[in-house]
Image 1 (cartoon, rainbow, N blue to C red):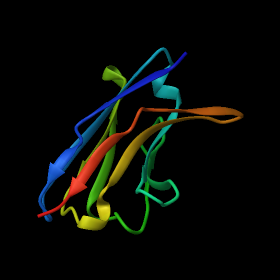
Image 2 (image 1 turned 30 degrees about the vertical axis):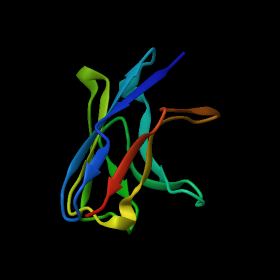
Image 3 (image 1 turned 60 degrees about the vertical axis):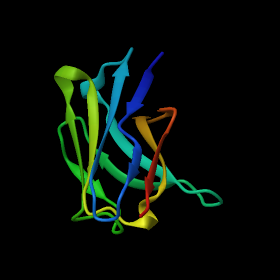
Length: 116
C-alpha cells in the first residue's frame, strides 16, 4: 500500500515562504497525478494544486502566482513551494495521490500557520 510522508509545515510570518514535501513509497510514483489540498478549522477541504506524472500543473485561483507544485520522480517526492504567504493560507495541508477508479491516498497532513 502507498504511504505518503509529509514534512515542512510550521509557523511563518505574512509574506514569508515555506516548502512542503511529500515522499511516497509503495507505488509506481511517476504514473500518478499528485495534489495538495488544505483544510482550515470548520471549513471543507479544498484543492490547492495538482501535478500530473508528466509535470503538468494546475492551481487554485487563490494561490496562483504564489505557490508552485513540482515533483522529483527519481525521489518519489512532490513539493509545494509557498511564497508570499497570507494569514488566509493557514490550514492543514494534505498530500494526495490520485488513483482514478480507486480511492485516493492521503498524507497525514502538516500544519501551516501564517501569523505575525
